[in-house]
Image (cartoon, rainbow, N blue to C red; front, side, top):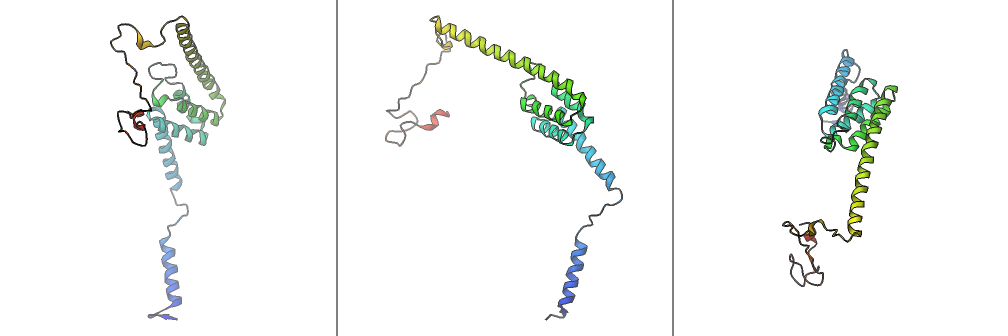
Length: 197
């Protein structure tokens, strides 16, 4: 079959040559290993920076990468970040010090699996156990104080003290009549949006 003045075999050869030259060469070229090494060095340097100064998401991603690659040279930045601000009352509640972030860093240290990570993990466990025990004791003390106040005939409502200028009166909406946000005869007796306002 003749398509124009080119034969079918000529068109096929032309398409084959075009495809052969349009596909990039995937073989290893001189200097490629240096480029790869430089690229991974930059990635690791950025991850160390993110682990120290990044947001919670950046810290988690950096810790996951270090744990997945099991590089022992990153034990120190991981263990420093694990123990950083763990005992500080001021900084402990920041998003970058969230328990999920600290747990991911501890996971990364465990994945590295070197014997030098054990003291840092034990110290973090001891501090965390002490903090959790203190919070449990505080909740128990507050609960006991409340139960004693209720059992002793005291008023359990902290806003109900005499002379409290900032007392907030409760608002009751009866489901039998329309609420303030909706008119009568509507499908709902009161607006479901009132709970959001």
